[in-house]
Amino acid sequence: MLYYERKLKRQGKRRIAGLDEAGRGPLAGPVVASAVILKDFRFRNRIADSKALSRRARERAYEEILQKAYVGVGVVGEKEIDRINILQATLRAMELAVRDLNVSPDYLLIDGISYPAIPHPKLAIIDGESHSLSIACASIIAKVTRDLIMSYYDVLYPKYGFARHKGYGTRGHFNAIKRHGPSPIHRLTFSLIR
Image 1 (cartoon, rainbow, N blue to C red):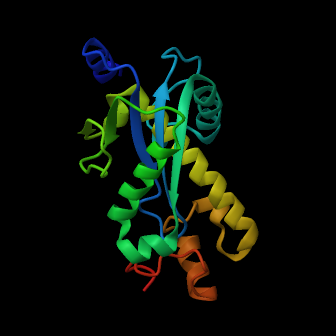
Image 2: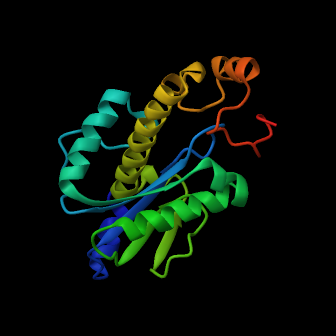
Image 3: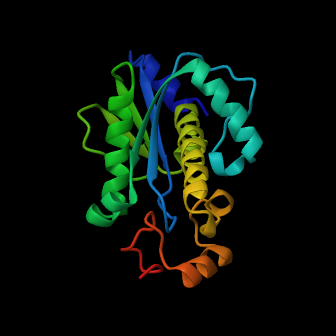
């Protein structure tokens, strides 16, 4: 999982930031991106794609990552997603995450195929969480952060069950939208909401 980090370190790159996002597919809430520059590559907790970890495993890994890395987070809300589309909002969240880092990265490793408009050398990697420890860490930070945001929204809008489904299109979520209409955090340009 350290192939790209090792290769870049041999090229003299020291501050390698992994970037990933959470929340592209949901019907509600923000898209959250994270940029992670590891200071220590040894972990007690399992580090993997956030979707491959249980909630408890993600939360334990999250705490350890915060201790062993520089972390930046970018959040783009549903109104902006509706205004510029989900792809552009995701790239914007990644830009914000890199800006939020305490240090400037030498190189960016990005999960996926699209590049944010950031003036750093970068590489997009399909299934990046499987090939880069930094991207896997960014995946965990983004997912846990977004889950916390959606739990907060569950308190504000309890009729929708956001703490359970995190805004994804579950049967219970669709039923809540049918009963109550969209909430202020629903993405109104998504066809399933329209």
